[in-house]
Image 1 (spheres, rainbow, N blue to C red):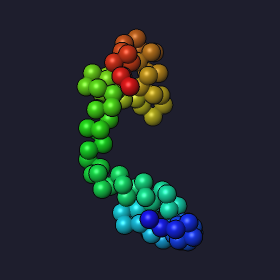
Image 2 (cartoon, rainbow, N blue to C red):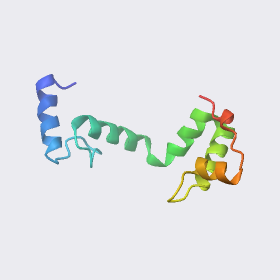
Image 3 (tube, rainbow, N blue to C red):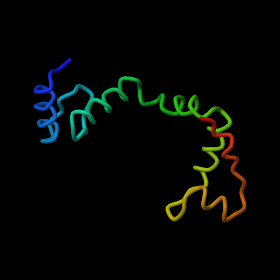
Image 4 (cartoon, rainbow, N blue to C red):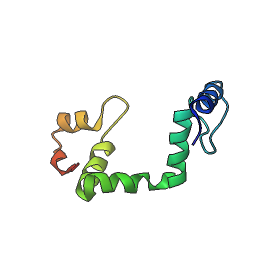
Length: 94
């Protein structure tokens, strides 16, 4: 674990655009780079699976229906309401 002073120095360098954490490319602070690196180490392709586990299979399917209805002009929820398409958000378990 880094000391506070070391972390402050790494944060300063990150804010200047330097990558100070392996896999933290693009982060504008030390904390942001740590989060990016953590997400990448888990594998970005597993994000959908993690979300599916969080909200359940039925909720994930409903979320997909809602997302498929979205356009540049309106969200999927807005379009579903306008067109009378039923989206059962009770399936989004937490």
